Length: 251
Image 1 (cartoon, rainbow, N blue to C red):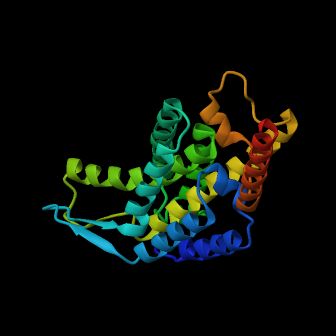
Image 2: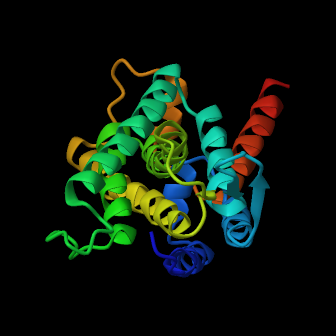
Image 3: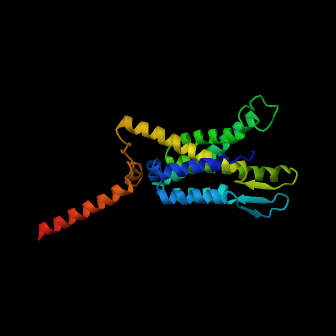
């Protein structure tokens, strides 16, 4: 993958959308506040310039903070907030499926080979596109789709390292989450959430709300229409006032 700062540009655009409140619904569904999302974006941007060297003998590794450690940390947070163990399994399984799909598509189309007749689409755009679509299809929920898209691309980098070790290729440094992989991870994650948001919104409107039959209450809580922070505060005030009135009535 060639280095191009498209990932940073997209993060700036997302920051603007969050600042003006256009991403509130998606963030609430992912159990993130505006402030938390902005902190994550800041960590991604700053971390993209930081590489941690890891000695590895023939194949030393550089782990990019913004492209590897921050996405993994966010994925762990989202998994902790997942409603059920089933969603855990689905998100991690979808990550493996996404990584395999990106690898297969890249191998079949021979991205990076100028002799390939399919080189009309650079790997920088192809990988996030495949990862975003497959992650949604395999993960379905917004959290699972984001986890699958980001970890799927990251797993591809990790898999490349083990392939080098197993194949005995010439010595060289391996970059995990760095260079073009950072852009691919950012684009894949945002695309997966966007697809999940659009498709999920259409499905909920057609069926009159999220399907509740047979689903645990903690999962349904994450599927219901989120309230804005102002609405939450207003609801708390109303409930407090109603409780005080009830106590006065009992006296």
